Image (cartoon, rainbow, N blue to C red; front, side):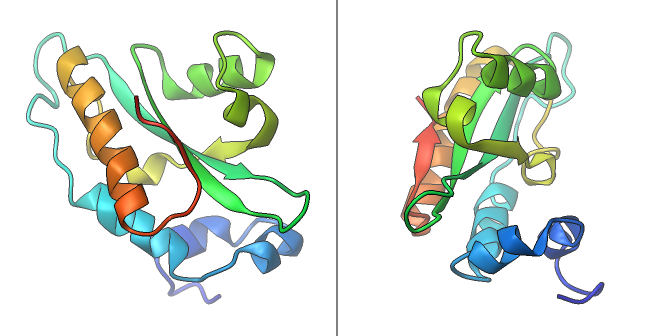
Length: 141
């Protein structure tokens, strides 16, 4: 990967090569980015807009070493919410076991938003990732 690649590729440059070597398709992250960029929050920046959607990169190193995404929504800071998942507090089992890191560049353009819209966009993101052919998508209730 060169420094002139997509934002996702540049973000991954600092990762250990074993993670990068295990990614099945170079198009996988680009698909996720296209899906996320196609969505817009109509309440972003409004008064009382303090909910966020977040996406976590999942990696199961056992077996085939598959990669996936978890989509969630929170009224807390997404970094804090990720830490809570990893600590087991109101945690998604997938994030607790397989969560690698947040992917804020996918959703920064959406946040913050009103609660009702965060619930809608959480589901829309998860459905969009599944429809784009991403095999392992968790969350998005």
